[in-house]
Image 1: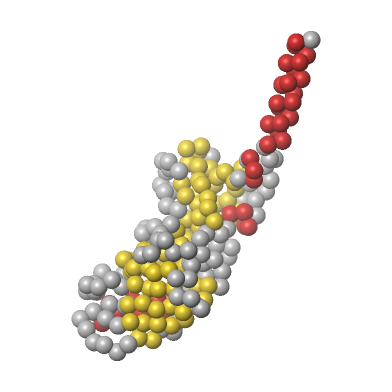
Image 2 (image 1 turned 180 degrees about the vertical axis):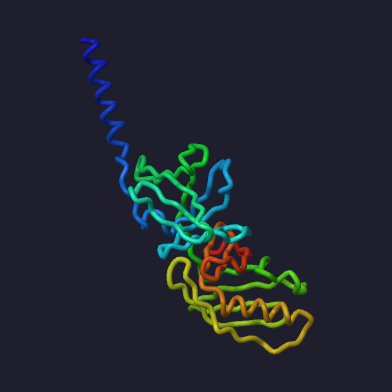
Length: 236
């Protein structure tokens, strides 16, 4: 009698555990796009957070060479691979586990698990200070903070080194952004070369904005061009 009760309890426990585990299923672009994937304890060369765009692009959240070009879901639908411009690939295995959480493994290595969180959009009322612009090493840096303020009603304004600037912006998707054209005040100063470069980059080349923690990564397609740091982290 006792043995039967033990066996019955085991069957009930096994049924409960089986019910909590979802069967692996094929992934779709919606499962892995609009999510920032961050490696955990990675022992591989892949250490930067990244985001996959639905049109096939890959955005890196980090000041590294932008060598990642495309990505694709595997033919069997149970993983995906990202590729650099030379065709070299990084493969990620995926599993659906408890509560629909997607667990991702780099090349099948459990110590290279990725964690994912939804892309956080730019919020109106956010003020960002610029601390990196691509290929600006020969330009004299302004002494005052260069900043961008994403105002309400799709307005943008800020300080570009010598003058104040203002204009319009529009977020078309979570990370597709349209900025400009930008107008400025008419003061002269020692940092006009930097200012012209900054305004040209911001108003003409930027079309993608990826927010990661308190940093905003601005891209031209998949090429990182500018990094801004949130100056008012308590903004709603």
